[in-house]
Image 1: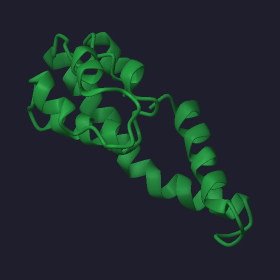
Image 2: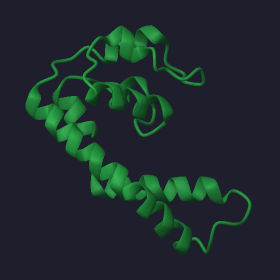
Image 3: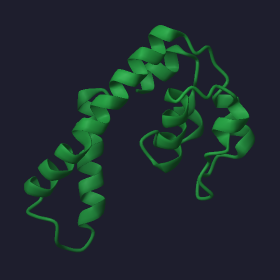
Image 4: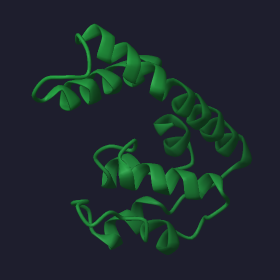
Length: 119
């Protein structure tokens, strides 16, 4: 997803630490739904996000070309499909869903799998 966004000169990864976090996914979903106005996209900023509304707006000013939007759509669909599978895989490889801090380890495992798949 990040590659398609970068090709559109939408530097979401600069303003948001994790594009698969709450803020990042809301923005990506809005882009895929047809929203292009940076001020409306930046309105999806979660209060816990360190970047300001203005920083996110600046990062979302880009060139939304059809071929890059298509790539973003395909990568987002793959991410959504693989997300529950990777959660299950991580849970199995970490010995189940119980234990202190397991949620963080599962998230780290999902992030590792996502990066390896270059979604």
